[in-house]
Length: 155
Image 1 (tube, one colour):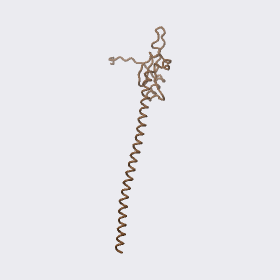
Image 2 (cartoon, one colour):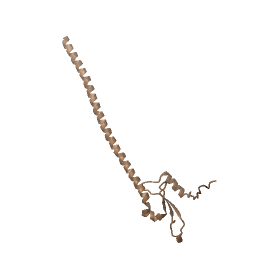
Image 3 (tube, helix red, strand yellow):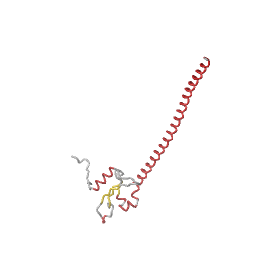
Image 4 (cartoon, one colour):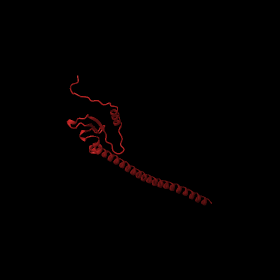
């Protein structure tokens, strides 16, 4: 009977050791599989995010370039020539695109009063910047003045 009991105890101890070893193996295997899947998921999501960011950056860059080109070509557009003579326009670029001295280049015998226009060219759904809104407000409120500066005459 002692041998049967020892045999049963040996089998139980073997089963426990096998279970412990197998559970560690299964756990490591599962962890490795899940880590691999997590890395695959992260790289997929990261790649998709990078593509989205790149597409957004390219779209914004195209819009900016289109806006810059439109600013330079604006005097050739019918909307501009209907408003004023392009020869009367001076490009500033910032904070507004053009200052126009309307009727500055009219014939000597046909002198009309000069009108000063501030023009900003916008494409798409672009709106005025904060500074541009302030410039517009100053012009609308007639807070505009003319100064003659004589360098070296300050006393």
